[in-house]
Structure formats: structure tokens, C-alpha cells
Image (cartoon, rainbow, N blue to C red; front, side, top):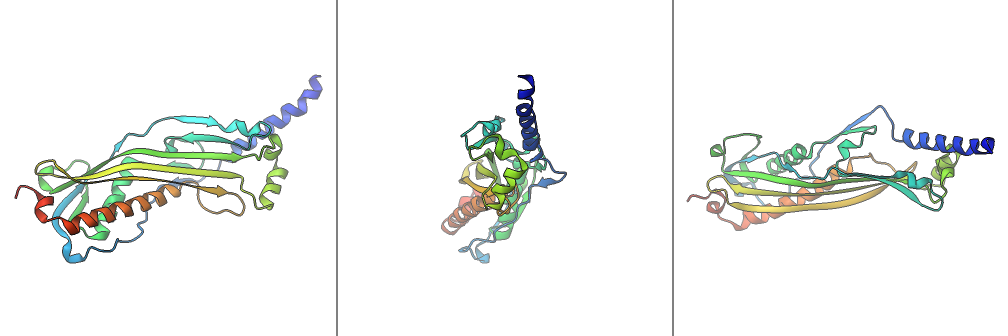
Length: 252
């Protein structure tokens, strides 16, 4: 009886090692934001003669990690998942250098400068508010990352190299990555602390991973941020078109 159980134990051990090894490389990934370009509808002559300070955002994300990856080893269960509230804390390789409380507002600075809405835009973690006309701040509530390991219900068989090779050669994905972000950005007048503009950004998407499916593991966070900030800039552009300077500056 003991000998009969050894092959099963061996397969289980090998499968677990393969699952772990599938996430291990020596590289690291750093969050990088690339703008999608300026929005239309605000001419250069309509730029407001204001100095704007963008502050670091509040980080209100959860800290949960929910690990159900080993469910992929259960017969007839199609996949196992790990869900992270903070993808920079996965503890796997490649590691992910990601600071949304700083990365997101720096992206806002890039977009505001690119669109030329204001005379000057700075990123400042502690400037005297008397030196600026508008203060832009925000709060990050979600940067969820879900990693699904696909087993197609074949349990241990899917984890063997031969079977994974067969799945890949058939053009089937071996993993699915899911992403979601949510944050709020707002601008308030420095003169009286009144909020003059705000916008909520929410987005999610997923992608297949496998021999015939390209793309990095974490790059979709930058894509979602770019899409969300474009809608935010369009919202701000509309406000600039319809509001007088006194609305933004205050104290007039």
C-alpha cells in the first residue's frame, strides 16, 4: 500500500513545484505610464493662467490576498485563482514596482501638462498652498489583480510538461490575468478650499496568457489608468470651456 501511494505523492509534489516555478523569473517589472495624447476641444489660448499643485493620493486599497490556486488540482475544476488587492505584494517573480499613491498623481501631472490646461503644473508632496491656485488630490480604492491558472478540469495532468505543451500547441491559453482599478481625483481652490472639479475613474479588463498570447503580466494597469485619465481630462476640458476664470481662481 505504501509503494502504491508513492507515484501519486511524487506527481503531486512535481505538480506543486511546477505551479510555483511557473511564476519564477529573475526579472522585475516597474509600473510605467505612457499618455494616449491630448484630448481635443481645448485650444491653447483657453489655458488658464493658474499654478496647479498635484499632491500624492491617499491609498485606501485593501490588503487582502485570497489564494485558491490549488483548486486547479481538483478534478473537473477548470482553474485555480489568487486574488491580490495590492499587486505589488504578490511575493512572486517578476516582482512589480508599483506605488499608486505616487504613480497615479504623477500620471495626472503628465496629462495636465500635455493638455496645457493651466499655466504651470507641478507634482509636490508638501508645497505651501499659498503658492498655488489649485490643488489636485485623490484617493485610490482599487488595484485588484487576479491570476487564474487554467487546468481545464484535468487536475494533475494539466500540470505535467507534456500536457502543458499539448495545451499550448493547441492554441489554448494556460492562464488568465484580470485587472481592476478605481480612484477619485479632484481639484479644489487654494483660496477657500472649495472643490471645483472631481472625477471618478473605474476600469477593468482581462487577457489570456499562453504560447499564442502576448503581453506582460502587469502592463494592463497602465492601460486602464490611461483610459481612465483620458475620460477625466475630457471632463476637465468641458469644465474649462464652460466656466469663467473666477470660478477656478476664487477670491474675486
